[in-house]
Amino acid sequence: MAGLSGCLSGLSSGDSGPQPLELLHAWSNGDGAAAIEALFEGFQEQHPDVELASEGISGAATQNLGSVVNERIRNDDPPSTWQNWPGAALTPYVDSDALDDITDSVWSENDMESAYREGPKEQAKGTTDHFVSVPINIHRINNLFYNKSVVEEAGVDPTSLSSPADVVAACETIATETDAVPFAQQTKGAWSTVQLWATVLLADAGHEGYRNFYEGNPDREAVASALDLVAQLSEYYPSEASTIDFTDANNMVINGDAAFIHQGDWAAGAYPDDFAYGEDWSYVPFPGSDHSYQLNMDSFPYPANNPTPEATKTFLRYCGTKDAQVRFNKAKGSIPPRGDVDPSEFPQFQQDQIEDFGNVDHQPPSIHHGLALDPEQRTNVVEAISAFIGSYNVDSAADEVVSAVQ
Image (tube, rainbow, N blue to C red; front, top):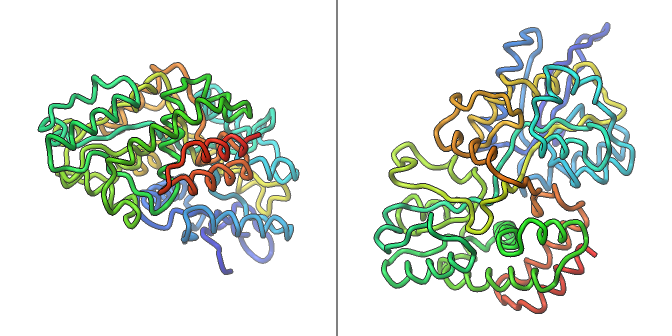
């Protein structure tokens, strides 16, 4: 079948043999491919009679995956489950009654409901009052990674920065005192700038200002201030920012050609062993946002009219276990949604992220990744920021971004 990204032999069978459990995902390479393979291996160990096979749907991150899933659901032929951002990103499926309640059948097992952290637990409900999906990971978006040698050469102490304006000032110092690019940002794809603007909004306007935006009550002055700060940071991007991708930008930090990069924790997952955490690189929460752990997550929804109901529930129950979350997140560079997983199972960076999570006051959902906004609103914001890149016309962009959520 074209577009099928995963095929697990199901747990129920008839005269024709086991019915396949289809799992669609976009993790066709990199840390995602390693993570989903680790998850499948763990599931197979606990269910050795179940044959697993996986092939990711590639192209435009989750865009192609979403198109495949939507078409399948429209044709009353849903997959058993698939990779999807939770929260508001599930709105179209909730509104069309395409997801079923799995509170009793899945979330009552393995102490899931009591063990899951509050942020992921709320996101797992989509826009309902019951559980419709199982988050498998937590990515933090509001990280500022840095090459220690570069910032030390410049005389910049990232731990002393307390606001986005401080980051701008630090970039100016780095530009003056070193030959390195101060801020390794790519603009070939809009997503990095959407992430950056949302994090700057969180840091500049605070949790309340950020929440007001995604709840549909945006403060135009706060939106414009964050856009202006992004425009100021753009002065310190690589000269080739419009032609490089995220991997290229991240490699600039690894190679000592750049000081800072703002990214989700997956950036750290790409750092090689000889680029050592604490010695060669480190991170701080994006200055001004240390009170928050800005969430991005992946989850597996449970569709109505499920073709393999018992098999799917069994898989989702496994995804909610400690074993599954250690396997998946250790490979993905993220942290587990369960709060009772032993941090010592993870490398030091992830241990530090877990500690950070426990110390923050807020767990705001991602704007770009759809947890905070429904797909239509998210598309509107992405289009507004895309138009902003290059021209950096703050007034025009502020109008467009505000209208995107109203």
